[in-house]
Image: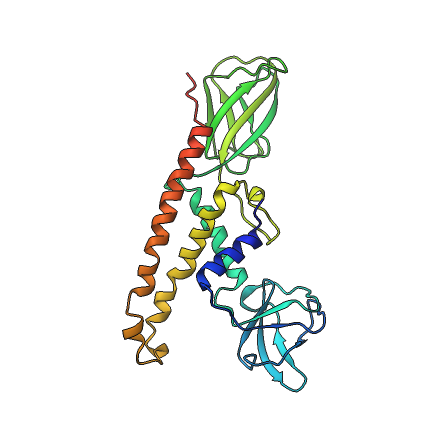
Length: 293
């Protein structure tokens, strides 16, 4: 199963299109509080005011000592989290697409994919012990439900007939229903186990080791997420290009005309749109909503 770290590598690799960013390696391991980092090779582009990245942590360089191949740094720069790093870990100097930022955009795309406009979802199942008398029961453990897919009653170990005339109620008082989501029965149901299958939004990556299945997706989703993250990362670059104070190269307008960055995303947007439509069709075919009458 694809991990968030593998998705980050894929996104950065495709956006860089073969461009190799300057790299170095950590000479000795550091913990989360170390503020002097020693490097294995000559500092080269590492100088005061630059930013480098080890794993998903960014470092801001205050001062450098070229002869000692070391730098005094600020840890956890740009909202990243300071962490321990081992000798020989790769250092990326002034990364165009920092790993923490790519992870943020992957999470933003996950939230977007679960919106009604895109219509993607994960499937969750919960078994509820029903007493046969309550008309409304709490959907245990539910944190966010988009819609009910199916509700069934365990009649026998090999027989789960559909329960019709059921409704989903949301935003109910948590003092009465812990999850705030309620399954309402409009017909008599005998005591026993009720299985509720429902659509829920995708979760969020919390670390690079999380897999797509951790957030509720499948490997069908990896290219959709990669395309979405690429589009989001490129969207702001046209703004940066239009800063008049950053136009140091007088030939920029001729070589990279205004709008070129935005236009380069159009094909990515078409690909993502087609893949989202295809994935929504697959999910709807596999998990159709059942009419309960």
